[in-house]
Length: 149
Image (cartoon, helix red, strand yellow):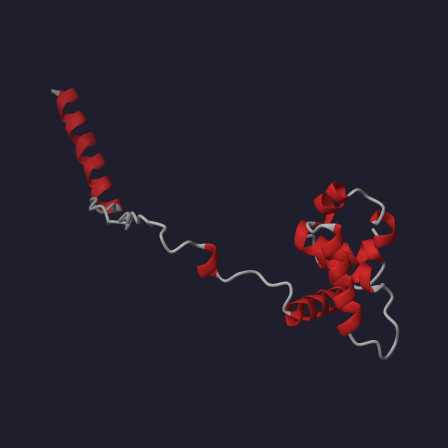
């Protein structure tokens, strides 16, 4: 799926598909176009398609092989693209998640329950052939004696 195919979707459908609103997507594309290198061989995908590929990877968590087949590029190209887009967006400083401490309020009361689920060995009599055979033979002998008398 290319960006040209979905750019005319409504904002609600676009966010549902990619995970980000359309204005933020455009802001991300502007950062990618401004900061990603343009030297060397031109990429097969546009910056918008590279960002869409990365967002689809994050959103659907499909394998890079499947994403590569959908976009017509190799698995290694998908991996490189995702890493470049992630690094560029993080280095821009505009798209970061708050730290773990910020997500959890300090006045939250945490209750911890500890359950001891260690295994304990059970003492059972040892099984051996000798003990079971002797019991069987003695039982047979007693049975023969009682039946003959």
